[in-house]
Length: 55
Image (tube, rainbow, N blue to C red; front, top):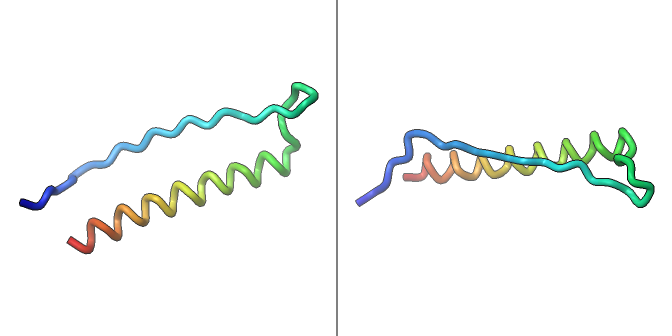
């Protein structure tokens, strides 16, 4: 019996990295890490959508 998922809820919590001086990463590092996180999330969502479409 196939399972149909009508709704997917995704929760993400991102904590800022701190460097050895106790502050936050440089703005460019912070922006690139955010882009990497967004890219990974989009890839996972696309995988789920592709799996759904294969059924």
